[in-house]
Length: 170
Image (cartoon, rainbow, N blue to C red):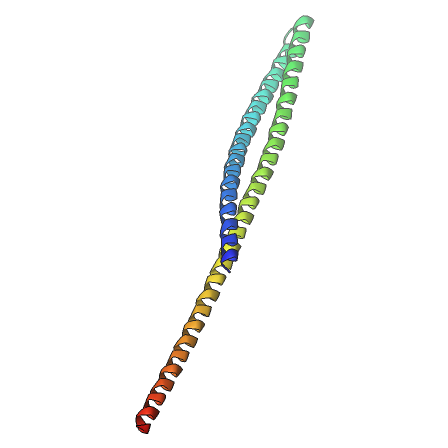
């Protein structure tokens, strides 16, 4: 019984140390999620700015067309607009990459949370086993004490009877 208790206590110790490592991994995963959320927000802001520049470029291109324009100005404005569209497309790609990285980070965070919860559950089960063993030992000790008290009572009663019989024979 003592070996079993020691073994369970050792397992609890191991699980507690593992729990510390798992909680550290969870904190790291949470930090990555926060970084990912920041990256998504920054990428979305960059995309919004790129789209705003694209709209201003379209307005500038339209202004060139509406005015008495020089074909050279139109070509230049068109190239600038093409560059702005390209930047907006790149910014949209960055948003998608940031969202994908964030999704992976959230998945890693969920897995870390699950690992911590599972480890805590295992520790609780080991502690439950220890409580059960302690209860069984307490019950066995109580039964043994009852038996010893009963035996002592019987021995005491027999001793009085023997002594009374000896006293009666005299």
